[in-house]
Amino acid sequence: MGRSLLLLLVAVALPAAAQIYKYTDANGNTAYSNQPPDGTAAQTVELPPLNSVGLQQSNTLPIPTPATPVPATTTPANTGAIYSTLELTDIPTQEALRANNGTFTVGVKMEPRLQRQHLLRLMLDGAPYGQPSNVPRLQLVNIDRGDHTLGVQVLAGEQVVQQSPLVPFTVQRVHKP
Image (tube, rainbow, N blue to C red):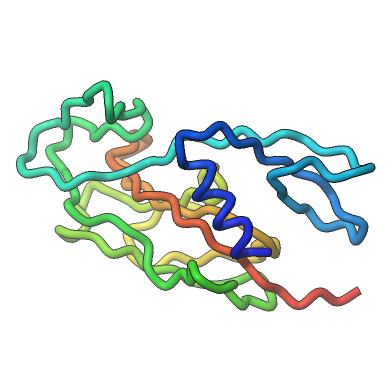
């Protein structure tokens, strides 16, 4: 199912208008599909636009263009900090992440190194996760099995300086009835 959802998310990123449906299957698990299930109530899922971080050549603020708008939440703050590389590591995207208790650690690759006034915060499924940290190894605890997205933000106080691209991944956990 993880690969099919990954393909579905890729298809949603294309210009074609696709719809995602969220429902609870017969075993009580949350499931997602590109077609509403027969005989089961389903909710439509609104997906946010994909975020991207481009390489910046200077310490000036990027200028949004109509083809690549920069949402206010990812516009660099006036701190002069621009990270040419900001991405998560140690997340398998081609196969399920095996975490029997839902706990695992991810790394943050960034260039240059994190500046003293900045902190890192994970974004799990579009929402802030955990406490901001200055350590480039971040732990997630008791994450539900299934499909998720994960990104990392650089913060200056409460202001988002920069955000990494979101990475889709699947958690596989042992289910004990």
